[in-house]
Length: 22
Image (cartoon, rainbow, N blue to C red; front, side):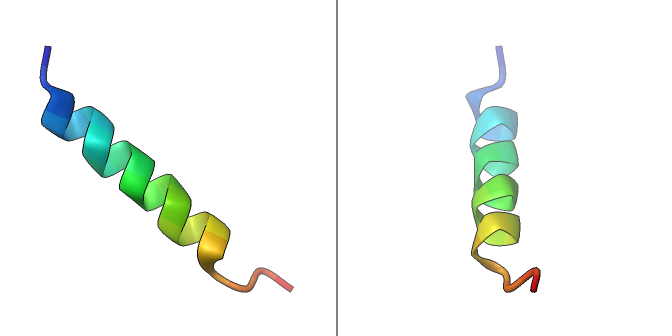
């Protein structure tokens, strides 16, 4: 299993969540 991909996905989700959607 490639943990790197999982970490990248988590980072992307975190970045998107931090971005001001409103």
